[in-house]
Image 1 (cartoon, rainbow, N blue to C red):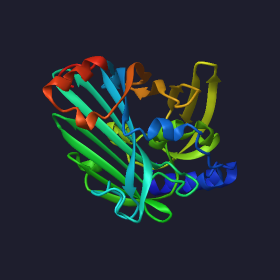
Image 2: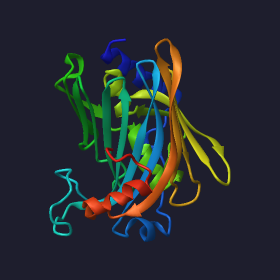
Image 3: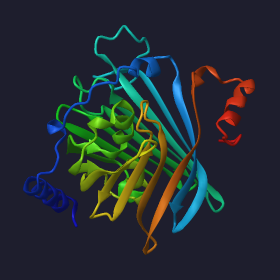
Image 4: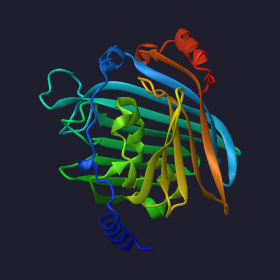
Length: 301
């Protein structure tokens, strides 16, 4: 379906079916202990065993989620060089999500960065998103920046189809911000039919345009030990399940991502190995490699 027709069809369905808009959703409050955990001057590092679908096969690898709060400039949408001096700096929860896996002889390295305001009642939308993929054929990059009522999308790539793109999308939910929303307060997650930008990493790996799709979001399971939040995209035949701790600080326990690959539905999976709080930016000597062993990460990661 041509892009403009897809988007008009999406808007029609959104109007007809009562799709959940971001502005109509209840803004969550912060848990009382939020600052005690997130304002310690440390990041949360979590390592995962990864099975990543690529080229019709499952590839063993490693994933790491790095969550940290920091100051962020609203106008320039960058981290300030001198925190506390900028008038328009806000607190964000930043997620850096990395994956590393091999496909035959050559390696893949991916990273997604998401900057979501901590105080959502003041700034209810994620401010910025970037995703990059590196492998031996070349690399790709995608960035989304929040403007007044929209996201400005920029795409750069070694591949012709997705190279040198620039366009605008109306402000909507991002799948990539759901991880931060879980950590801030999962009560703010959208439920029901929702217009959502799917994973930016998925769009890069599949070489498809980064644009909204209709999705169905729900909690499929909540037990004393695990909550499961699911996003289904009927048009894409894609389902994401995120398993997390129902208790604060709502650590990510595992995730599964299913979609068509090579004529069948295949599932990428990640399962938590280790998690710790650490000021990792101060741990850059050879002696600090001990922390990699504590996270059960390979030495060359």
